[in-house]
Structures are given as structure tokens and as C-alpha cells.
Image 1 (cartoon, protein in one colour):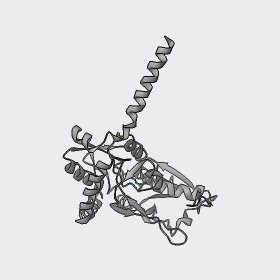
Image 2 (tube, helix red, strand yellow; image 1 turned 45 degrees about the vertical axis):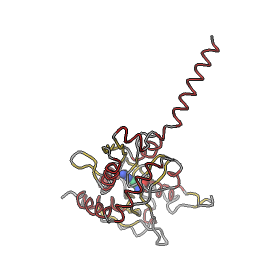
Image 3 (tube, rainbow, N blue to C red; image 1 turned 90 degrees about the horizontal axis):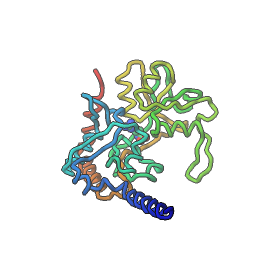
Image 4 (cartoon, rainbow, N blue to C red; image 1 turned 90 degrees about the vertical axis):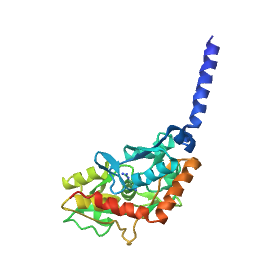
Length: 279
Ligand code: ARG
């Protein structure tokens, strides 16, 4: 009897495991069209790429995803979630696409595939108007706010904790042992509120979101984050898709290429950069 139970259990376990090998592939073009729905995960606290207007997520990434849904002939469903769960949700197949002003990084590439890049950015630092930041060294000893799990978070954390270069050799961070601390927030708008309340001294986030936060909040200003040698960070934004979901990737890249070629993405950026500023 015991043996039978074990065999049955083992068979059940094998079936579950087998079913799950296909987990990341449930969002194939075929299945999306069968379900009539393209599910996109974003974090709508990152204008102009995504922000809430009229109670729902809008922005550059949403416009792009609408075009992808149109191309597939399905309805677009946008879910507003925490930024740091987007990659794993695309990986597990909960979402077909992650579109969130997301920077292509080697670490993320281990979990998902990235489309062609549709724009670039650099990190910016927001401070109160009285505090002038010439380069990252001016942030020594400061409390620095970032959005959890973003490249701004990684950049600041690396400089505080030290990191490894491409060959695996340890590098001392510019802010190491200076008393500087990284404070993580669910999004950059909350970090900016903490900045205005005097709880932190700076916020590090991508360029356009930083500039829009400054326009929407009096008493703040922003500047590009420079290293002591004058260099900057550079980042490529792309849409992420489950690893190996090539049929969907092909559609995403085709739509992106068209929107890049005819200047539509540039138009979306200009349009939403104006729209996202509250009078
Ligand atoms: N580009 C940065 C990154 O990929 C920040 C993206 C934040 N996006 C968002 N929708 N909140 O880490």
C-alpha cells in the first residue's frame, strides 16, 4: 500500500514538474491570440514612460504596448505592480511583457530576453535647490533615496558597498566608508516626498522621470549624475519577454522598429513629457 502511495505521489510530482517546464511559454503568440489578451506588467510611477492619469496607467510604454496588442489583434491589459517583481512575473509567464522604462542589464538577461532598445537614459540626481551636486563625491555621507530594484538603486549601492569589475576584481566605491546610505522606496515619487520632507538629501533616478519630478515639485532641482572623472552612466531601455518566447519577441521587435523609424516613439516621449506635468 505504502509503495502504491509513493508511486502515485511520484507520478503526481513528475506531472507537476512537466507542466511547469512550459510555464514561461504560456504567453506564446498562439496562446495570446487564443485568449484575446496581451498582459503587460509595468510600474506606473515613472513618467513619461508610465504614470497614472484618469485612474489608469498611461505613457510611452503603454502606447507602445497598445501598438503591439493591435498588431496581435488582441486587447491590451496593463497591470500596475511593484517594479522589482516585473522580471520574475515575465519569467514565470504571469505577464507576456514587462514594459517599464526597463534598462537592459546582464543580471536581468539571465532571467528574461530583451527586445531591441527603444531609447537611452542616464542616471540623474535630484536634490533641494540649495544643494548643488557637481559629481557623485558630493553625495558622501548622505542619505540617498532610490526606487527599489532599479539601476539607480544598483548604481548607488555599488558605490556605497563596493563592487567587482568585469574581471572579478574588487573595486572600492566612491561613497564607501563615507557614511552614505541608500534608502529604498517603492517608487521615485515617494522618494521625492521624503526628500521634500528633509528625510533624505538626494534621489537618484533616470533622467526624464527626474526632470518631471522636479517640474511637479517646487524647491527641487536635478542634474546628471557624474563620476569624478566626468563620465556618466548609460542605459538602454527595452521590453522584456520570457526567455525563448521568440514568436512574441519577433512581433515586439517589428513594432518597435516601425515606431522608431517613423519617429513615433520620439513623439510619444514629447507628448507624455508635457502631459505628465501637472499645472
Ligand atoms: N531604468 C531603470 C531600471 O530599469 C528604472 C526603471 C523604473 N521603471 C518604472 N516603471 N518604475 O532599473
